Length: 406
Image 1 (cartoon, rainbow, N blue to C red):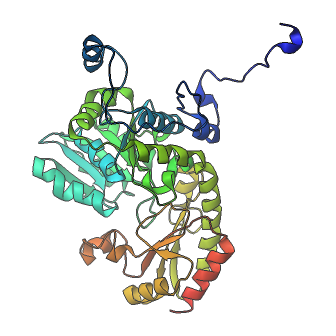
Image 2 (image 1 turned 120 degrees about the vertical axis):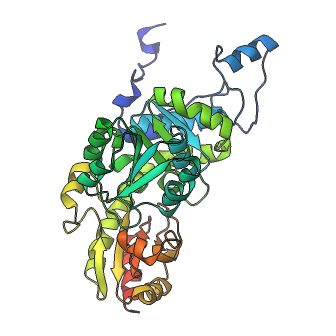
Image 3 (image 1 turned 180 degrees about the horizontal axis):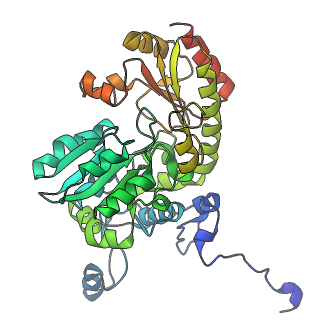
């Protein structure tokens, strides 16, 4: 072969973590079949076959690497898990059927009767149910604290404390918790810190760099980002998976379907573009809301008037895609505002390409008493807005019209 015929050298990094997040989101974890497909293959199969009984035995004993059953693992699911791990900078990832399946598995797999959990009280309603209603059935106690009060975290520690749990920013008040400081308290107590990072997304906040041991996501939100299907993921060290998580998932079966894993895998390719656009629009929307009449409060981590603006600058790479605000008139005012919207739709979801508005007091947190909601900062006039991909001027026009209905 002459010099002119030699193939051009290929840029193939030995360590994918040296690539920028945007590149990892497109190429990370890809495994091609012998057909050389461009898009990742969708393996819709329940089980797998073996050349002989001996190889089947070796596969089940873990001596021969490979897939056994799609409840345990699947080639498409594995690609999604590897891409999430590369994005997050985690050693391992395991996908689940939903975000709540991820939260439940991340907690239950490492807890036993007599153990104790310390958690921030500002949490998604279903997470609070697991901590307050479900875990006590198995002899696991939980102490809820003001997540912003580091002394409260410290004071709640017991000899039996095994896990700390928090979300930041919180749902729906966008309260921030100092993850690094809480991680330090947890580790001093011999406990692991589990962080729900859904609102920040993997692009705007890196809990592992701040000391978290386990990170969970509802990939139903920004990762899919187009209202199509459910999913979740747990990220951790490989040792945590071996010691606690893998057997729990294998035996209890909260597995994601290969089809949903494929949807999530493809959603990751555009995650950076969507989050960047949604965040930019959210900042403009928050500023516009702050100038509208009868809007009492606007909470957005990217604004200088956020109660924890300094922590937001230190801990996050941006303000995120959600804006929370309080309107005059309590529940009646909030309903009037939401019903007057034409472009923004009423829904309890978030992180979607479409802008969605939620009244938490009557939806995501409706099961709590008024006193408990007040303790979490959820008033009857509070609305949570998930900013989508529409032009921000159109969203602002819609919000301005709705404010006129108050």
